[in-house]
Image 1 (cartoon, helix red, strand yellow):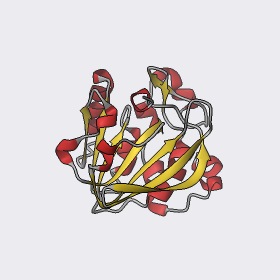
Image 2 (spheres, rainbow, N blue to C red):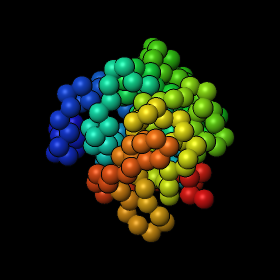
Image 3 (cartoon, rainbow, N blue to C red):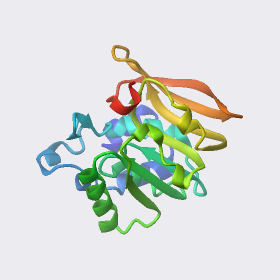
Image 4 (cartoon, helix red, strand yellow):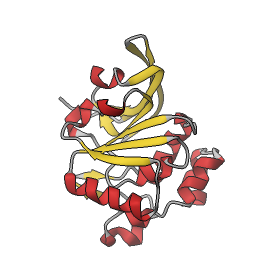
Length: 203
């Protein structure tokens, strides 16, 4: 997967590549998908939501430039695969999901791997983020949104960043970097990509 999908997408961060290589994706997906775990196929987790394909996620993470002293919120982390990867790159990772069974599964997965610098928490409304542990250095939304709500901007540190895909129902989305400046954000488009919507963000 690294040689055929990730490296050809110009991912060069060695720590990121090592983190992906050392994280067994099959531990985070249903057994019926084991045969395609490392292909570029969609892997459905629940409610018509798929894991972001690993080569796309790697390309996104390359631009996020996570640092070892940073606090990161991952919104819509599903079974914890992204959280496990990021646990190697940042200080502490908070993941949130709106499906209690998926939260339990993600927690079990991360505990089984003895990953200590992360936690996955149930939140009914993903777009509200996680105020309890704010402010964050970075927020990564694992899916496409129509817009970035003010509630998340408030949870960033000064000059903090939100990374997500912004798109409407018809348009192939833009992976963006949104930097907090005072109480607002400045958005930079990075590359085009198509990932699943998170319905809670589509109002």
